[in-house]
Length: 112
Length: 109
Image (cartoon, rainbow over all chains, first blue to last red; front, top):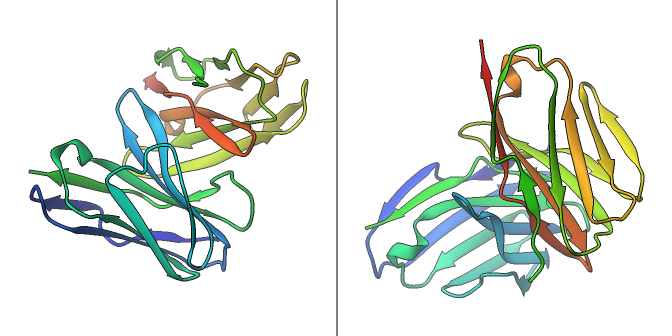
C-alpha cells in the first residue's frame, strides 16, 4: 500500500515565523500535491509538483513556496506565517496525472 | 470561476438506511471523483468516473457520471457506522481539479 507521511499531525507557530511542512511518499510517485482544507471551503490546491525540482502553482499559492529536491519528498514552506494560514494542510501523491490519489493524514497548523 | 455545488451539506440517517448525495455544476467536467474523509485522516479516493452515463460500484457504494457531464451522484446502500465521515465530490476539467465542499454523514444508532 502507498504510504504518504506528513511529519507533524499538529503544529503551533507564531506570526512571522518561517514554517516547513514535510511530506514523504514511499511509492516512487512522480506527482505530489499540497492542499489546504478549511471548513466550508473544501480542498484547495496550493502547489503541485510533477517531478524533482518541477512545480506549478495551484489556486492559492500566495504566501507559500515549495521544494522538491528528491522524488519522495515534497515540502511546503510558509515564508512568514500569518494568522490566515491557520488551517489543515494535506499532502497527496499519484504516479502520474492531476488527480490526487493517496493523501496523508494532514497537519493541523495554528498560527498565533 | 468554476464551482461544484454539493448537497446536502450534512445528513443524519439511521443505520441501515440508504444514502444519496450529489454534485452539480454549471460547467462540464471530463472526470468525476468521489472521496471519503474519516475523522482525523486524509481523504481516500472511492470512485473515479470517466465517461458520461458511466455507473460504477465499489461495494455498497454506487456513483454515476451524469449524461450532461455537469453532475454526479453517490449512493450508499444499507449504511453502517463506519460510513460516518465527510464525502467530497471533485471534477476534472482541463487538468484542473475542483472539489465540492463536502457532505458530512452522521449515522444514528
